[in-house]
Amino acid sequence: MEESPVFLLCLTARSGVPLYCRSKGSSRQLTFSVIGSLNGVHMFANNQNVLLTSTCTENTKVVWRAFHDSITLIVMSSEKNASDLSLHKLLENVFGAMVLVIGLEELTNIKNVERLKKDLRSCYKLIDSFLMENENMGDLTQCVDCVITNDLAILQECLDSFTQASESNFGCLMAGGKVLAATEKWWRLAAQEVMLLCWLVASLPPHSSRDYPVYLPQGSPTVPHRLLTFQLVPGVDVCVLCGPSPTLQKVETELVERFWKPVLDPIKSCLRVQMRSFPASVPLHHGIQGLLLVNRDFNKSLYTVQAHPVEAMQAPELQLTLEQRRSALRTFYTLAISRYFTSDSSDGKTSIDHQYEETFPNGFTHSAHQCYTVSSSHKCYGMKTDLYLLFLLFNADVPTFSMRAIANKTLQLFSKDFPF
Image 1 (cartoon, one colour):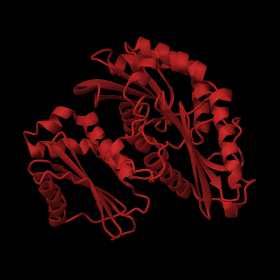
Image 2 (cartoon, rainbow, N blue to C red):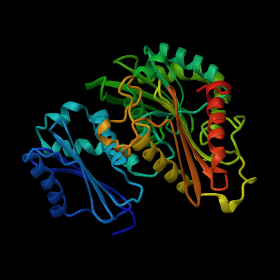
Image 3 (cartoon, rainbow, N blue to C red):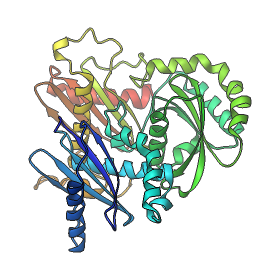
Image 4 (cartoon, one colour):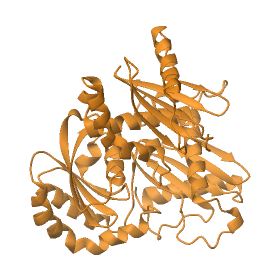
């Protein structure tokens, strides 16, 4: 077996017929006997009124999840940072992707298994994007990855006018799967729906325009909407959710150039801040290597592991690779959310399910608002407020006692100086 493989299985819940198997980090496929055994133990537990959700072997974690008593998803992961929370979120995202592309009716009322297998092929690119390493965090946070741009006011006004002219209230401007600007009603969509739409556009091959039918997993799981997308410049797309009208040709020929050509320079400038997620003028402490800021009211987030435009000032021996930074920040986020920053039962601002949270150690009845970890290669600090969740990845040489002050200053920066 190759290093750190991940296998994703989809089967019919009642008969156990395999619908597809997707994998990461392995060139081989699972045998039918292995697939049958994994599904069989889950079905046996159900027949005994036992809910089997996960188990571990020496080097592999297995998670099961049944949806609508119709589809069973199973994930096997040998990645060292795999957790119940991250794997359950993966399965939620995969089922949401299936609903988004082919609709809930096809998944809950299976009439022809072979036809369903064929239809599910159109989901593969989106599903695979959740298995692969990614520069965004929305799959784990269930929030929308965003970009702060200096030209937001101009782009927002242009987007609102373009969306209205397209006979819609739901419009979004995005780069690399990150939202630059969106209409008010776009933000009113369920957080997972917005995240899935962004990941769908990012997973599709570049194209000048598209007319793509989509189902909203929570808002409209059985009736499709039209997702119109237009590439303004390579890497930047404007998207509109609409009904039967207008036609793709009308929007492309009459509206796109009219509304977006005058703001071509601000659009191009967004590409320069896409990787960092905010302009170079935002001053971060030199010891910060990565940042994740979640706005809990709007379910949107800022995420970067390239916190500084120029990192020459930092000693190379203190630097983690970008992949190591992503892994460290994702692992710390999972730890903090599942163990310390538990769900709010009163205000419902967070979307983490209670069943995936770990029990806080006996003797502590309060809910933590700050936490940190220290290792030989890096340090992490997390902070929870009424409006924000902040997670920072530091160089190992940053003094532990100073992390709280740096976190407070960083939070103030994005809540007052550069509001997010």
